[in-house]
Length: 400
Image 1 (cartoon, rainbow, N blue to C red):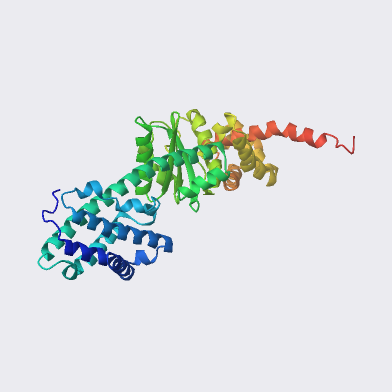
Image 2: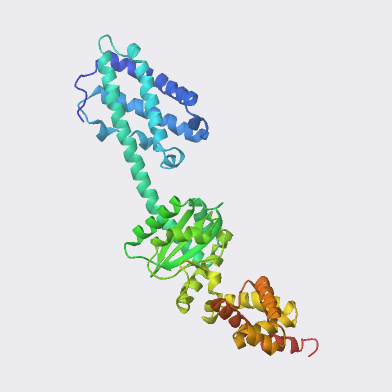
């Protein structure tokens, strides 16, 4: 942009220098009166903004003294404030600050400019205000770029800590820095990573999460894309809407946990389910990790094994022998009529017991995959029973 072609007179410059302090004070007072966001700032941040306003007026005077210089090359108004100020106020609010300072200077042009130089001073103020606006945009662009790179690194470290089940002080500080300290209703989601650069894959998933109204952290771990989603009301529904962000193959959703420090439990279930999902080719996409308990148990997941025994065998044994006997016989016989004959009961009795089994365990034995899950649960219970018997039969130290 071209500089102002008129050299400022010594009289106008002296008046500007004498009133610089008063102009800064007037700008601060107008900010206080006209902007709610300014009044909500801390005293420290308001102090920094005052320094920025003073620097802006001071550098305008320096530039107006020699208009042949290029303002964009000499303006360093924002260098007087810490970079953290860009987190306290937005670019729009910074432009409000610039506009307010310029308005204050313009309102005093008639008393500042030497006679006959009012128009030149106004033109110089307008020219300089445009340069200040461009300088502010550059500062915020640089801050956003640096913050984006740093936040991406923090995000990757937090997701990695979740996958390792860590919840130490380092993780807590990183979670706080990302603004996830108070985020609730967390689920972890695991699936194949799509093709493309890791940064692009993560950015696309995070942007998709924002569009769906949920928080999103993500990281590519080898061939997997793992996401941690927050504020999730409907895990399957939300992930179904986002599934295009993963590559082909199964997508497994872990259980909902109350906060990010418990997200390791959800992540372990999701990863375990992803590893076992190939054993159920007809699994829905996405699929809850709990729907894959049987496959996870067969694949060696001890948590899934224990969960199955607790969900199936314990309620059946607690309700009396008939339901456990009916479940076992039905799975062996493979049909309602055959089960009734083997148990010497009416088929309606078998139907009633199957409904009771469904109510107690959540599994419908007439559905093939759920029958398979119950079969695995009962098998695991039988395998665990000898270990329990040995523990009960072993003498204590006092008895020995």
